[in-house]
Every structure is written in C-alpha cells, then in structure tokens.
Image 1 (cartoon, rainbow, N blue to C red):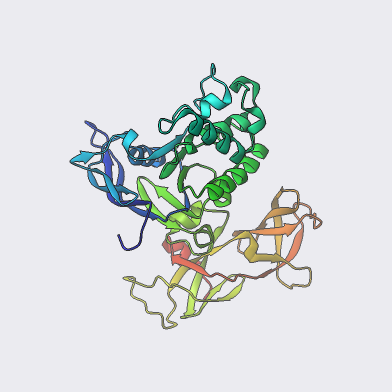
Image 2 (image 1 turned 135 degrees about the horizontal axis):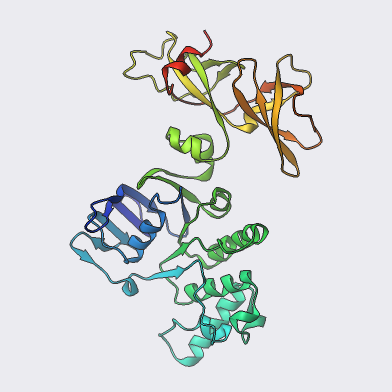
Length: 370
C-alpha cells in the first residue's frame, strides 16, 4: 500500500463454488480515511458480491482485502465479520420492531457501562436528527426516519468502515435525494469511511468522493465523479455514466479532431494503436463522446438540427436532435426554449473535454468527416 487506506483491495477474485463462474476478477481499489466510495453498475455485475466479500460473508479465491491496515481476507484465511470493525446498513433497515428507537441504536453496543452506552445512543440520535424520537417504535416512523435509525445503529460502535447495500432503494425519488445528502453530511460529521452500493448514478454522484463503475465483475474505473463524467477511462464507462452519444471523427493532429459539427480542440488522449496510424494527421478514425452540455442551442448559429424527441426536466429540456447525416445528438436546453418536434433549431459546439475512443466499426470510420 502506497498511502494509508481504510480499505485496500488487491487483485481480488471471487467465484461461485461448484459452478466455476467468476463473479469478481482482478479487482483493486483503495479508499482513503474519511472518504465515501460508491460502486455502481448494472444488475448482476458483482456490486453486492464485492460488499459481501469486504464484510466477510463470502470467501475469496485470489488477492487480499485489508481494513485499517490489517489483512482480513486472503484465499487461505478470513477474519470473521464481527471482528472486521465494520458497520452494515441494509436495504430493509433490519430494525427490531419490538424495540424503541433508542434500544435499536444501542443494540450493538457492548463496551462501557450503562451510562456510557446511553450517552453514545444520545450522541448518535443527535447526529441523525432523531433525538426527539428516542422513545418511539419503528412503525411510528417514516421510511426516511427508519433509515436514519439504521444508520445511527451502524455508527454507534464507531466502525472503521461502514458498508451500505442499496440503502435508499425502498424510498421515493424525492426522499432518496434528500436523505442521500443528509447521509453524506452525517458520515462527514462523524468522520466515518463508507462504501455504498447503488444502481443510481445520481445518488452515487451526490454522496460519494470516489465512484467505481463495475462491468461483469471488473472495476472499469475508480475515480472522482467529475473524472468519470468528463474523462472516462473506457468506452463502457463513457456509455454507462451520464447521457451522451458517439459521433465518428477523423484525427486532424494531436490536439484536434473533426466531426460532423466541426472541429474539436483539447488535450485528446488519442487511441491510435495497432490500426497503423500515428498522431500525425494521417486521418486516424475515432469516435468522439458528446454530452448534452457539449451541444448548445444558439438561434444565431447557421448550423441547425431537427428536434426529434424532448424530455422536460423542470429547469431544462434534453433534446434529441437529428443532424443532416441522420445521426442524432443530445442537447441540454433551458426550459424556456420550448421547441416543437420536427422544428429545426440552431446549434453549436461548446465542448471543454474531448473524449475519444477507437472507432467501433468500419461503418463508423467510413462515415467520419473526410
């Protein structure tokens, strides 16, 4: 380990016993003390298996897992879950219905005398804003309040690492967003490091310091949310994170690529490789990722595109626009620009981050600007 990490995972492999199917493979990550990490990916990609391996509920076949500098799992040894110094928050909260809120929060406290335990429970309820509900039962609380009780219970023993498996999946959209912000604030206030598993990208971006994108058991990228969106490490990450489309492009030089909408300039990590081209202006063919915020609606622009679909999101529209070639791009447009389907509107490029990948197929390369 180069730098101190509360969680260090190295070359992790997990396979189903008997079936031989690999669930996690060559997975590595480090989570700094006090950071919140989030794992996103499609259903079945291995997110929950990773969390269960960290917790000690499934054995590993290769690599190691270390928590707070101590190795807790190798193929030949495993520290029991209760001795790993972790806290757990589940989807269904797992509160005891017959216990009051204060007793639920204090259930896992074993150290200290009764007065110290009561003080710790009060501290945790204050932290999650539920001090006034100490004598209530779980059924007397809302879903969001129950989730905060579950969080307080997990934090009460002061775990080295908190693990949360889809903790907001049972809540409505508005409550999820609000509670996500609250949970981040609570974790930061307590200095708790955490790993969250979710399928909701916006939830991950709102809560986490680091986000990992998983694909069929492999971690494609582990990075800051900003980097994932603007500097995806692979085509899969570029396609999975946020909204966007790929347009065929031709390399002009080391700083420029030409697409149907014009030339883009930037610090371009050009993927010229075994296809026999250099970064020398000889016409390498690539695909360029365009996000909705890269295409600006501009009535004064001579370049136009046809509105074929639109999604109203309150403060803005996301327009799907058809170019003259028949290809489509997305544009983020303020909501007071309410254009009709079939209308042509002026557009221009405004891309600060140029992200390119090898052209996906011969047809894409053939349709790149000449």
